[in-house]
Image (cartoon, rainbow, N blue to C red):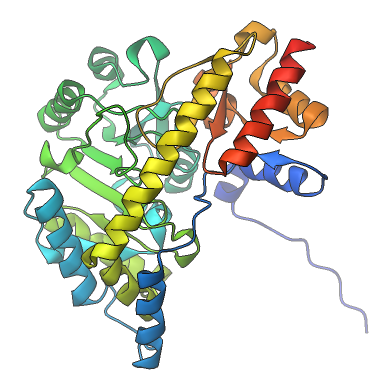
Length: 391
């Protein structure tokens, strides 16, 4: 007896999700020879040894079972202590949820706080997941243009103009991906005031907080608007722990309770031995010494890239004060962002990310990641210069 082949059906909201242009270019480049990737934003450093040793000890000590949904008390307390020691903030451990990276933290915020028809204001350009999270939640996303003349910071007056009675959330990400911009104190306060005046949540995604240059400072948005802010953070960038999938979110007590409920059915709990390693990352001096060494190396790479870009025709770089990206204006080439990225890959085997991967307002720009060796950066810069001089 033959059975009819069933047609595959997929939920409509999944069809709304766009595949990441970053991943597309990365996968295409992986099939080519002699390619240098300045694409995916992943630290090229190994996880500090003391953190790896903590995970090994945890396994030997039997940390191989379920934990409380919100995370082990040791790690939630360590996160609370971290904000107290670094920023002078009082964060109750019960307001902390340990997540599978900042990705899950942002997803939980969208799913817990937004309903069909709600509006969320998302910067443009911005990291790729925010718009996709909005689509899945059923919320309408409203783009807030970030402009180079404002150092890619939100204009509070323009933000005000976008707010309606349906606005429920504003997304911020500083230090910023893709631009490397940081947030000035007065702008942060203005956004906090708007959120408080209109009873709007702020989702503040802050995984690059320790990679700062030229005297830039970072202050968590929660310090300005504690009752309105959902803070997402990650161990991935700070401690070069991308593969560990460890992050956390901090939110007002009523909000975090609902986020924990949803998290319990999605993840259950983050791997137990990974949580123990996270506690060591925050509490041990060796970890923070390694973080500062990474920051200093990123600073050297940043300087190298900016110096070489200045010598190239048709391209002008915004000078970032945070993260490990350079957002460079390529309008002088006469090419669109995607066209330029494809041209550069085909001509000289260098991967950069088109600015439009981060939103329509990224047109005319490319993102260059300097989270790779100085040797790779020097070779990539030489190739870029040669290609542009022959254009």
